[in-house]
Length: 150
Image (cartoon, rainbow, N blue to C red):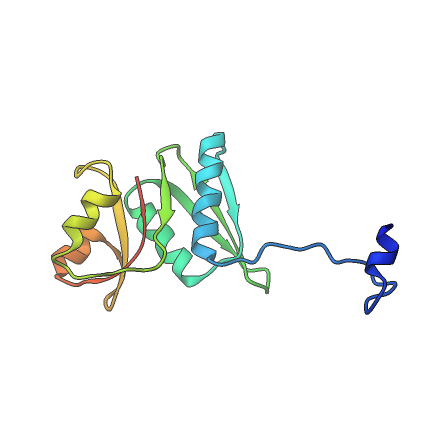
């Protein structure tokens, strides 16, 4: 049988629309884009779309010196972020689902996610804002795990 005979029915004469991937997590896409650009040796990378969570995550990365400056480009849509890479990022990822962590459980998650106690950062979203695991430990607050980088 030819394809013409199989598809005759409801959608006659309608071109089949190509399927596109659904964006599940903006943060996961952003981190994967940065990780891939870093592996390729790029000096800067454009992340789109932008979100408040992505911007806060990037601020934590910048505070720890894993990325350089970043600039938010408002295109009157979802927005873009241009990030300067400095070659220090080995791996970054998002933890999904966002598990709850008490401030006393942070140590277990450090062992689970990071290669060493000495370096690497787990990013948490807490009632006091988005912060790294060290700051959460100092403030004695728990929250949900967003992701990690080292």
